Length: 171
Ligand SMILES: [Cu+2]
Image 1 (cartoon, rainbow, N blue to C red):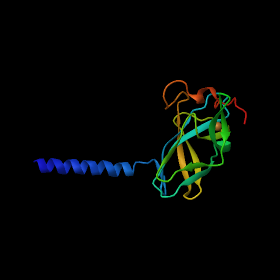
Image 2 (cartoon, protein in one colour):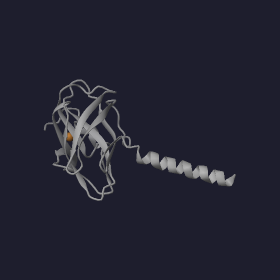
Image 3 (tube, rainbow, N blue to C red):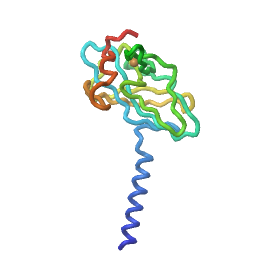
């Protein structure tokens, strides 16, 4: 009986391990991508930001070098810097994905910037975005549009909230 239970436990653990290895939303070479999302736009909003989690099992680092989408006139890679106590967005040429490591695009930090939306981001729709990596190549990832109030981070005091992703910010 004990032997059986041990066997079952092992099988369960193996099963979970296998599931974890295959649970990435999108995979390209050694790069796994999870939870791509965008906030729904509100009336009058002309720009938006996309977020995603990258994890690499590769022995060498890679770089996200561009993003393309028909959902916006221009798509850029951005980060957020603080200058004189004011958070503001800044374009970056690339986002490094470390070897055997991860980088998360999240509110208040790195994001994919959609400028001049061609149509509003409607909640529960998906926005296809082509991500291009220096080594791994290209992949089309569907970003899920979450409610305009969605915030996955810790509550309150989020730099993103007073930064004007809602369209007021000049680029
Ligand atoms: Cu931005």
